[in-house]
Length: 68
Image 1 (cartoon, rainbow, N blue to C red):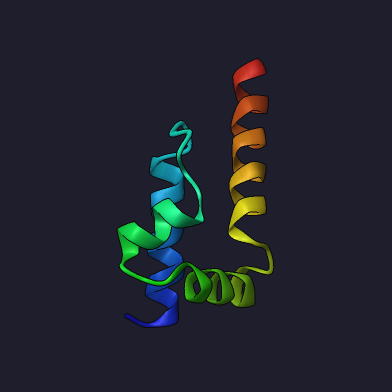
Image 2: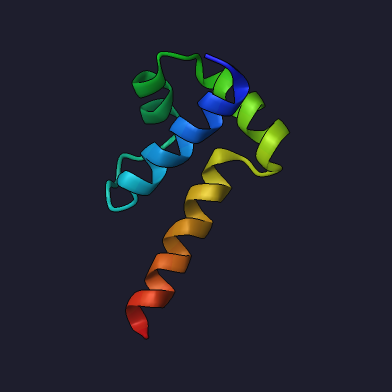
């Protein structure tokens, strides 16, 4: 799996599981069959954010749209 596919699948999993309270780096790495260390490094190098901060921002954005 190349870097682009890793990022695409990670973002897809995040978007599909935003309401899942157990959504974290461990959950994602198990779903993608990658080590959490490697997944975090690849994600940060391409997106510029940690997975945890990306999930937090997405949840806050969703919460903001729900309020409106």
